[in-house]
Length: 65
Image (cartoon, rainbow, N blue to C red; front, side):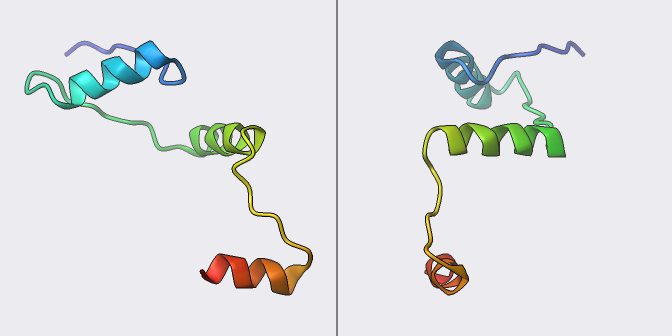
């Protein structure tokens, strides 16, 4: 077994991972740890992928839809 670390934050890295997903010779094992989720959340926030609300009731209403 060989381990390869790919930067999935780059266009080339994403393309390579997608290629390997469709390959029968490779198996993708993604790390699912808190740090990875935190970094993804930070990136989404920086990109503006957030929910804006005026108050708690507004937030709850938007989360339900």
